Image 1 (cartoon, rainbow, N blue to C red):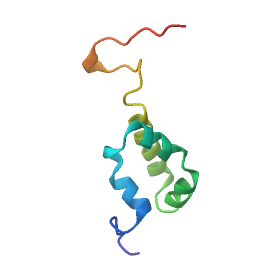
Image 2 (image 1 turned 60 degrees about the horizontal axis):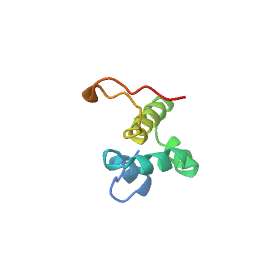
Image 3 (image 1 turned 90 degrees about the horizontal axis):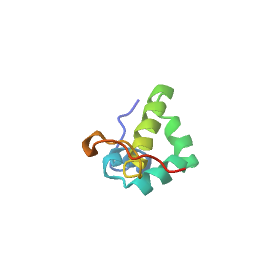
Image 4 (image 1 turned 90 degrees about the vertical axis):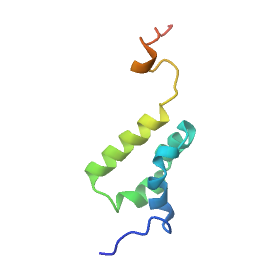
Length: 79
């Protein structure tokens, strides 16, 4: 098995840039089914689940009403 080339492979390159994704880009990545199909052939099911959770957290990072311990108490949701 060869070592993956993160700089030349666009699918793997997206993984390397996860920390720089905006919430909108992370949401688009979660919804990119063709990308998930390609990447699922390369990583284990456990790693896929962890990756989805990591991207999901990035997508929700600036969503209003989310609890952030650094901001104090969470806002009450109106409803």
